[in-house]
Image (cartoon, rainbow, N blue to C red; front, side, top):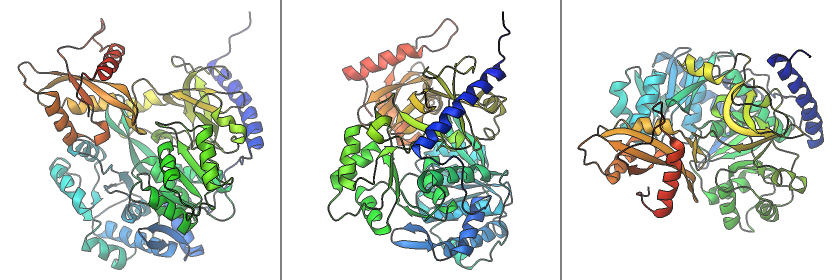
Length: 562
């Protein structure tokens, strides 16, 4: 009887075979096999400074009819960095919260913090008080950049976030003086291994956790995206971005990829089909990423006056509606044969997302006629494995299991949560994603479903434990259990079974109103008050039973609809 192979030997053999298959498939699809960074810079602010020296008049950023050349952007960033260091006392390693929507000031504040060597903390502008309080007390920023509307909420929670020594109003006179008249900082942080950002993601064991990312993570991700669009050579691309830039996908497509490569971002404050069409025509946009619903609306709004001849890389994400050959055909008929609609990528906050490339697999709709959702090949330098959920042992090609990923842009830990980090990342550097997938004979990834706990509301992740934690903050809530229900418009929505304290007269309607003030709108659950929750012998809530109950309640209209 032969000796059983060790786990390490099995993984090595598996990856060697997979690598050969992926190399052949990558060559056949025309995908480059290695990254080709354009500037040689090791951090994002250093890249912006590089383009300011070598292409100073090239447009870096467009917003609401205004344009920032690389020279103008770099100067504003350098002067704001000078203000942050001299006036707000920001030092390398300090956290800087950017609590803004999509606007140029978000980009400038982020780059200024990074230039000092501080840590960028993007904050969701849809937050309510409890969510904002958690993130500020967890990250402990010394400076917060916001606007007058959001500042009201910030000041409400600031007494419980004593680390915030200074608040800078992006619409105020102090901002204007800082970006136009303050002395330049001069130096530019250039350590790719230093902590550069805390990107918060939902957690399955409570409130959101900060994913620790470095400047090197950002630059690797930016180079991978640029490689898939331009091959890392030729004219830098023009992107249009309406995705929220506090969200890591929006950060990648609206800030990192265009600015690291010397390209241009046309930044929009929010989704607006007519504004997107106008931007594509006016600025010769090559790259657009949106949901299938976004593209369907563009098809409804496009006219003969709209020029889509530049749009060579339209990408979509099938969160609710799925991309089909028919939708692809309709888009090609409207935009032209050069514009082939495809799935964007696989990824998550922990990996800085954009972990795979799907280009080159669209002939004959190959990518749309296999197991959904087709995610393509890993970008150069990234490894994928589909493994047994219990043992992490790789499974044969075609079998379904947990997607594991190892990448240069993997988080370096969950902020101040070593136990969560150890549970998520193996000793060999593989992230246990909790997602179900398979690898086909070419080594292409197919994403088949989510971890049972995650709820996707129009593409935004909602974790039941987070909603349960927030609901439990209500003084009359004894316990809550949140499960997903299907929703034709949103894909899914959270449904909460809530037990109240004895003698409470709290109604579902009252608790729903309270929840709207306590959490972002997409997290607010449909609520059903219940006398008890089904438990296992060990005292755990039997959520499989609740999923069935919620589905029946929604079908019968028993609970209050949010």
